[in-house]
Amino acid sequence: MMKAAIETTRITLFPEEIETVVALREKGRNFEYVAEQICVSENVLRRELRALDIPTGRVKPRPKVQRGKGHWRCFDS
Image (cartoon, rainbow, N blue to C red; front, side, top):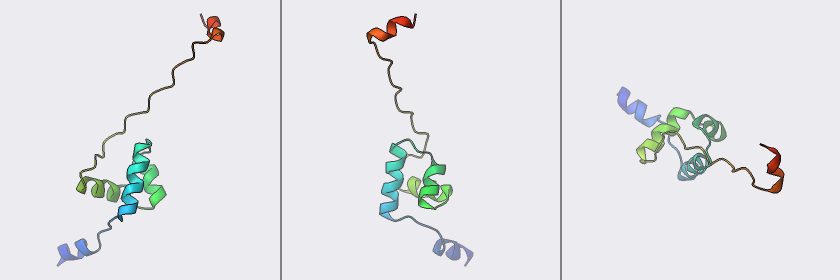
């Protein structure tokens, strides 16, 4: 009986929310930020993404901007 009660009260995400989570994760946002934006617990986010086989590991940082090579860089030496 307890197992049935837990399953009926389990929070799930709508497909639009999952799309939002994936989009924010692609931008490099962490689960804490995404959870605040959607107003759902981090644990619920991770559980739902794992159920859909979407990776929940760390997001790689975006590449850093390369320094310019203009004539003004000659003073850096």
